Image (tube, rainbow, N blue to C red; front, side, top):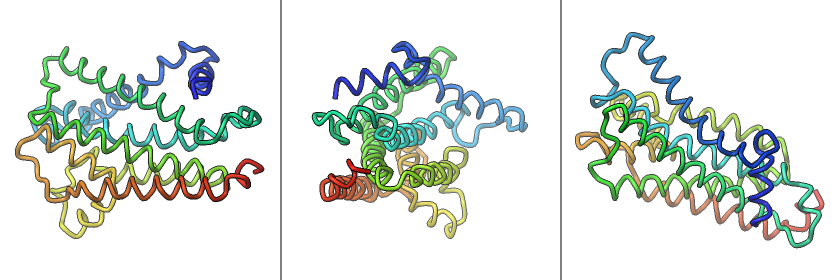
Amino acid sequence: MSAVILRDMRTRFFNHGLGFIIVPIWPLIHMGVLILIHAAAGHGAPLYGESAALFYATGLVPTLAFMYVSRFMGWSVTQNRPMMAFPIVRSLDVMFGRAFLEFIAACITLMAIMIILWATGQNPWPFDLERAVGAYLAVIFLAFGCGILVGVLGMMQPFLLTVWQIVLICLYISSGTMFVASNLPDSISYILSFNPVLQCVEWMRTAFYASYSDKLINEEYVVSFAVVALCLGLAIERLLRRRLLEG
C-alpha cells in the first residue's frame, strides 16, 4: 500500500511528489469563490450566524471531504491499473492507499481553513468540539464506504464512474452548503434529508451554532448508509475478485 501512496503522490500533479501540495488548495479556492459570489450578489448579512465565511466553511468542509475522498477512491483502481499486474497488489490496497492520501489532504484543508478564519479575526472553533469531530469522522467514514463501492463498481463498468460524477454534483447542490435546509418548507427539507451529505452538513453546523435546528439530523442514518455501502462494496469485490481482475 505504501508503494501505491507514493505513486499517487508523484503522479497526481506535475509528475512530482510536491504536486500533492496543490490538492488542499482547491477547496480553499472553492470557498473563496462562494464568498465572492455572496458579496457580488449583494447579500450583506450571512445566511446564518455572523460570518459568511464560517457559514460556507461549515458546509464546504464536510461536503468537499466527501466528494474528494469518494471520487478519487472510485478512480484509483482505474488510474493505477498497471500496478495490478503485480500479484501482490490488490484492488483494495489501491483504494485504501488513495483513501489515506485523500484523508491527509482533507485534514490539511481543514487546518488551513481554520488558520485563515482565525487570521481574519473570526472564531473557527466550534462551541461543541466533540460534536464537530463526530460529524467530520462520520463524513470521512461515509466517503470511505461510498468510495469502496464506487471503486468496485467502476472496475466492473467504467462508465459508472462518470455516473458517480453526476451524482456528486446532485449531492453537492442539495447538500445545504449554500442554504439552510431546515428553513425550507417541510415537504422539501424532508426529501433533502435523505441526502447523507446534507445530514453531515447539518450535523457540523449544530456544533458551531447553538441555535441551529437539528430537526433534520439522524446520525444513525449517516452511519448506517456508510456501513451498507462499505459492506456491499467489500462483498462484491470478494465475490467477483477474479472477474474484476480480468476486466
